[in-house]
Length: 241
Ligand SMILES: CC(C)(COP(=O)(O)OP(=O)(O)OC[C@H]1O[C@@H](n2cnc3c(N)ncnc32)[C@H](O)[C@@H]1OP(=O)(O)O)[C@@H](O)C(=O)NCCC(=O)NCCS
Image (tube, rainbow, N blue to C red; front, side, top):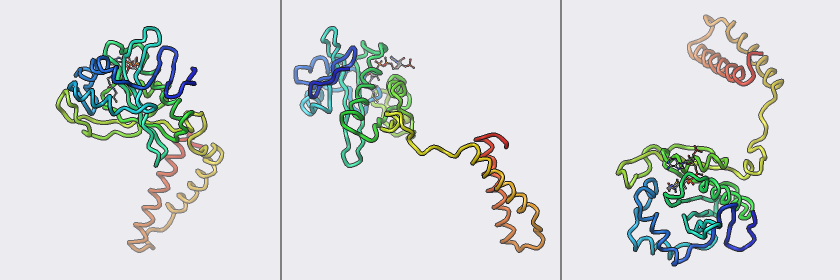
């Protein structure tokens, strides 16, 4: 989509523009609603807290989510670069009445595009309550992967309980379609390694244990176990050669 106005991002149905004090009523309609803030690390807000939030927002980092068709402000979102690590963190919230129409997925995709293509980030990530289906599906639809699960790491302020926190991320290489790592070994290379390891295992198994001291026997048993594990891994990767 066109995105040639500074501080403004655009998608098919949405305009993401800087938040303003005038947005108070719209922002407070979700920021003060427990159903909306159930899995957030803040809220539900008092009116003063929403005013403080609005006063602290920064153009280019925090955005109002505006429906292109009607001009209604239906949510807010943000991208927060960490310059030292060349990464960015995402956040979003939509008014409950706007859920389930693909708007979250649409704005998430645009924030990721902006982060990689305009800001040149290397990695984009976001924490999310592990049970927050709406939010983690937005990330999965946009190619982010669950990388970690931090157990009982988030205080669910509405339900008043400790819940698990998932971390999702996508790398620039993945976004641009480049392999994130060098390609793994070929099937022929794995088969060659399998032959060499099998031959070593065979020799180890044939050794006369009675002629070995106790520590040598222990070493031999460990080597046999390690070779067996390596063979099993190769067989899992490319079948029994
Ligand atoms: C997260 C959020 C922005 C998603 O917005 P959205 O526009 O509803 O998302 P989409 O329509 O693109 O749908 C994404 C997924 O959410 C699901 N979803 C939508 N509304 C839902 C609801 N009320 N309950 C559960 N899942 C829901 C969709 O079914 C879809 O999943 P699927 O692909 O498996 O079917 C929105 O749910 C929200 O504002 N939640 C409250 C704030 C919040 O939790 N923010 C994230 C903090 S990490």
